[in-house]
Length: 63
Image: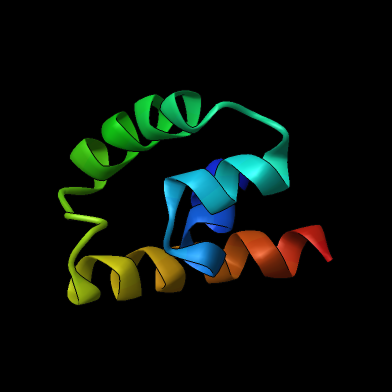
């Protein structure tokens, strides 16, 4: 969830990797199954919006 959250915040695997102290390829590999499971394309605006909405309950529970 942290990887998806960082990606949604930055819209970039490289910037998300910097935030998480990971390699950008690690972030990309972790995002692929998430997008596939959710049936969304994270590089498209609608997919990114759906991912952000899906993260809302997780964020509320972790605050």
